[in-house]
Length: 360
Image (cartoon, rainbow, N blue to C red; front, side):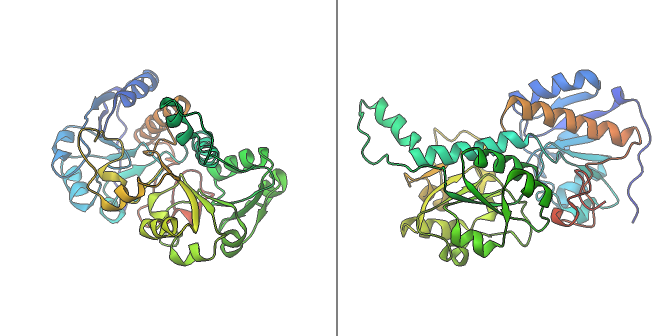
């Protein structure tokens, strides 16, 4: 089946329906749209089979990480004439690629701000190591004791970085700035970067056995799903710190919890969670968390969970808006859609060098 053909139309006539929209979505997209002139409509509900009707007269649907682009939703969008799914995120595991093939074009934002996410990973490391989160609440309670807040020097420690794409390499530059020894693993090693930045590529077994800290920066694929599991944890150093600012399903959470209880894992900093779609970006302060796994994870004092906020900087949001609207312009003006996701492949690792797109 060939890809759906797009006729050139005036950009000012293109209607874009945003789902899972927040105040900051409108702020940054309205600003970026001054250079395009699209007709933008914002909807707070997430996209699903019930809310898809809101996009009935739109040309493009703009979705985020927790919007539902499963086969039934794609069918509903296609039936109303949607020509493009413009993802304002890098991940696309919420899109049924077989359903969009030949019907609806899909593009993503391959990198928001590598610095934003890499810096967040470093912030989690510093907070966990020096127990900033615990010290903060102690002082609020007039407790100025430092018992139990002992940390260690990052200088001279070994950190294993899994995934050396844009974010991974920026993270490595930060870690090297602390004087850390960096071991890295990636199916597509960047030898020039390794020589330039002073880190070494190795295998996962070596990273697991030698690292004091392990930081995950790889995409979620069939190969990386539950990369951190009971077996891999058993090969790690006692007291290892785990940092995940990548994808929630990179970690088998029950295995992580078991290892935290056994003190095999010393601490964990998580900006993502495998079942986060039911909770992250929402306010449940007047309710309760009925996810028993997440609730248990939240009880550990040596675990910091942030709600997928690693990307959340002004620079990143501006880049997301500009890139997303640029993708839409490229499609409707007949330009090369560099950030298009191929309909034949769901594995980004096999074609990393092809710009921000996936397997054209």
